[in-house]
Image 1 (cartoon, rainbow, N blue to C red):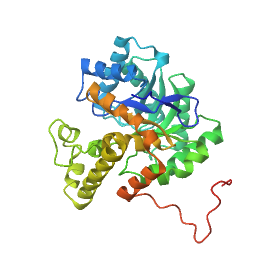
Image 2 (cartoon, helix red, strand yellow; image 1 turned 90 degrees about the horizontal axis):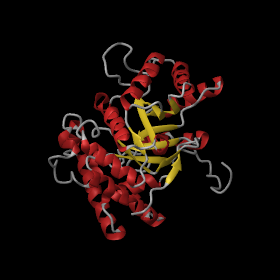
Image 3 (cartoon, rainbow, N blue to C red; image 1 turned 60 degrees about the vertical axis):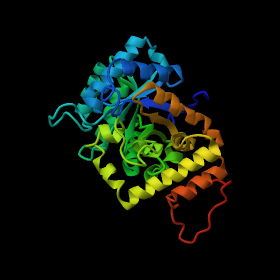
Image 4 (cartoon, helix red, strand yellow; image 1 turned 30 degrees about the vertical axis):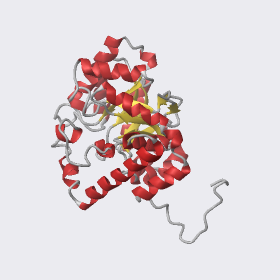
Length: 347
C-alpha cells in the first residue's frame, strides 16, 4: 500500500494527511466501544493522524468515543490533528446552537470536555448563521484561538459570499480568518467546490476538507441493484429517504448508469474498484487538503487507502474519459466574447 501523503491545510502551516477519518454517522453512532478503537488504531497505524468529528455527531457521543480511544491507545497529542465543529448544540435553548459568541465559546468548552482534550487543531463553523453579525462570529472564533482552545478555525457548507465576508472582517480588524472549508465534493456534486469556490482558492489559498467523496456510498456501486442490509442507506433510512427515493427516478437511474460505466473503466483500465477511483479523483484535485473517510470497520479504512495507488494513474487521458462519462463539469465563467488569456501568463 502506498504511503499516505500530506498537504498543507489551506494557507496555514498545518500538514494534514491526504486521507483522514471522520466520525459522521459511524463513530459514537452505529459504531461504539471496542470497534471504534479498532478503526482508529488501524487508521493511525497506516498513516492517518487526522480525526474529524462534531458536537452534533451522535449528539456528542462521537466526540466522547474519539476522546476515550485517543486516551486508551496512548496516542501522543502532538502526533494528532483533531477537528470538531459547532452549530447544532445538544440542547434546545435559544442560545444552545448557532454561531453567537455565547455558543461558540460555551460550545467549544463543551466539545473539549467531551473529547477530554485541552485544545483542538481546527474548529469549524458547521453551517453559516445568518442571524448573527459576521463580525461577532469572526471575533468569537478569534477569541477561542487566542485562548489556546483551537489553533485555527474554518467553515463548513458556507457560501463563497459568506467566506469572502469573513475574510474581509478578519482583514479589517486584524483577526484570524478561516483557513479551510469542509464541503461535499464528489463526482456527482461539483458545482460549489469547483465553480463557486474557484475564485477563493487563488485569492485566499483556501483549503478543502472533503466529506461524502463517495456520495454516501453511491459511488461504491453497492446501491446499483437496491439497498443492501447493513449499508448506510439502510441503517439511516430516514435520513437518506430522499436520496433513496431519487434512485428510482430519471436522475438517480442516470447516476447508477454512470457508476456502472465508471466501474468498467476502473476495473479494465486501472485495475481498481470504482470506490478507489472515486476517492482518487477527489484527492487528485489540488484544492483538496484532505478527504475525510467514513468507516464502520477497520477493513474499510485499509480498502479506501488503496486509492493512493490510483492517483498516479489518473493521467490527462484517463481524466478525459472520466469527464466523458460524468458529463457534468461546471461551465467556466462567461467571457462575453473576450479571448482567453495565455494560460502560462499572469492572470
